[in-house]
Image (tube, rainbow, N blue to C red; front, side):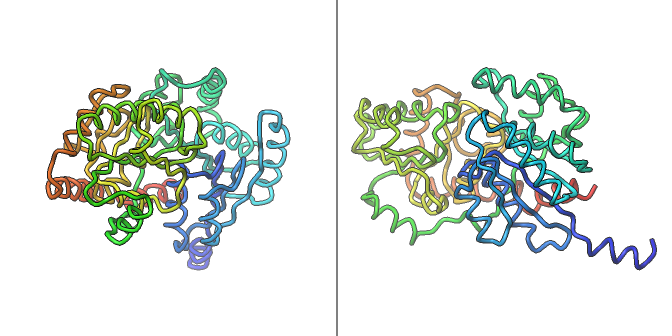
Length: 385
């Protein structure tokens, strides 16, 4: 290659625009944030983010890092034509080299608009795994549309888990365009802190002698918070030193169906509904045991985060949870409150030092197998290929 041309190639940044339905605190949103942040100092890339709805906590975090975030504020399907038009204008003005879409709505809307704008490389993100219990009729129709267009719109379909790859191949996604790139974790951002643990537990009136079992995740049928509460009630009947800390969007007393379940199960004095928090790592430090109780997952971000913090973990047998945990922690079938309760009691009955050893093993597994550096390198290869 001519030296001058090589210099131009090396100095021209690849413009990557991410399109996502929203930027609240969820697994995909948090990983998008980590991916963008990890490449802020990489001279090869320049990132911008488009939320089809509102800014959210993750959007604010990105803006604080100097990332341009656009919000199109769609509220319902009534906004669809306006959304298409505004997104078309925005992508046409930005002229990105890559449009990276995240999850079904953004895959369909962002992918089609990017193709109409003549974007050369379009990436779709697939994160769901369990399609048998796959939501409303509109969501199933959305998936079907994506499957039909999967051989036309995206250049690559990036599946977060092998289980997601298999389930979407079965419903007609174009296998030749599908690759698996697991989530990666920025280890330094998810570390246990004794100081933060003491502060949060004091704020929440959780004494040192209590064993806190934690849950992290937005309120959604897929997360099955009610199964967690049923298991908590069963475990608490046997071990009165247990307490339960639940955080996530809409996981608060204002959520009447959730709080009513807490009251009905007699857990109002032992369950804390903390809602959405910015310092997830800090709240995890306040826990002694982590529980992922989902009915369905792809590659469960929050489980890896808890492992990074050094928590012994319980997880339902969904998505790639088993791949992530290996032989560490406790795996139980989804939607089985009795076995979930038994797993809670099993870890709670271990002495604190044994739980710490198990948690440190989990942390080391993430460091060795699922670090962000490895995963970011895979995305960089996709962007430049």
